[in-house]
Amino acid sequence: MKNNILEPIILIGFMGTGKTTLGKYLAKANHLSYVDLDAYIVQQENNTIPDIFEQLGEGGFRSLEYKYLTECIDRFDIISTGGGIIEGEKSYALLKQQTKIIWLDCDLTIVYNRIKNDNNRPNANNKSLFDLKSLYSSRVSRYNEIAFKKVNSSNALSDLHKEIMKELTCE
Image (cartoon, rainbow, N blue to C red; front, side, top):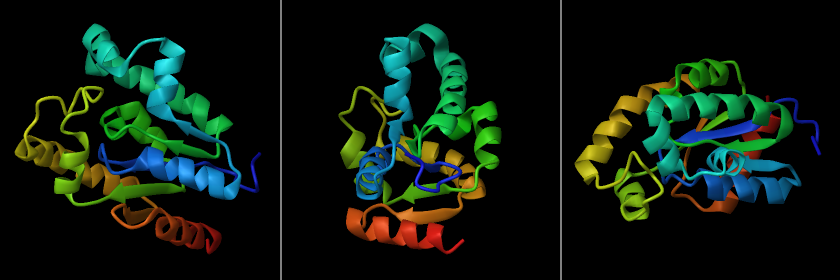
């Protein structure tokens, strides 16, 4: 159900900032369709993200990510992306054309504690907090460039929901 949403709300941000959690919350609260792009890739490819990275490399994964992003933009109201989606040039260019990009950001210590033991994140595996800060620093300007709105994802889901919906309905 499209609920007068002409373009999807697309959640971007570093891994572990809560894109999936917030995406599900927004979809349920607003009776909208939702997809987690990484989960969609896993389902379509019948393979895990780490295995795709291992078999195809990051470039191969980014190609799949773009392919499925183009599908999902036309099919879903809310999309949670992977943290590195801005690393793929085609995905980045496509995202730059969208108007409802919400950037979730929070303290990297919080992010580190959420993801440090998550083996399903190839770019975080066995990384120190310093390594994650370096990766974050390499991505932050791209998140900022395409974001319509930046929110602090350490806030309560209900507060984030209100903040985002207020912003989107005041366009």
